[in-house]
Image (cartoon, rainbow, N blue to C red; front, side, top):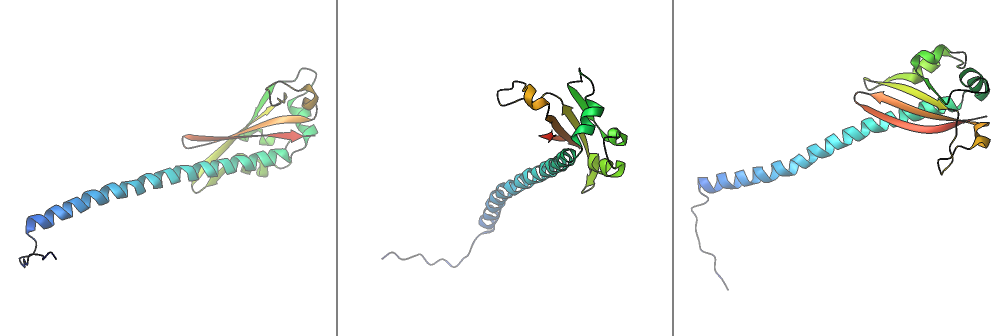
Length: 161
């Protein structure tokens, strides 16, 4: 059996300083991962809020009267292919309540302002990116883009007849 030498002098000051320095280097490196994880989580939280705002606007647009939207924004035999709606369009007769519309198009969450731009398209494309004229009579494409700070989020949907 091996016997440990008996040395009761303890650790020198240099040994203590070296061990504290090494421990500090290891902990600093380890804690930097938490900082990166926090910034990544914060960015994803902002993106999630933006997507939820866009979904709310899309749901609001889906609840609107299809015939009123068609008559106002896509009139006649040669209607425009795309129409963009912003906060200013809330006064149009297509919307029931100006205040509710403005609340959806411009909202503040956690002291961050989110503004929405809705693009209505008269041509509805199927999976292979070809325009389906059969669906155009019954559906209007909706794309909602929400902007805040230096970020954007986009969702797409349809308004049905």
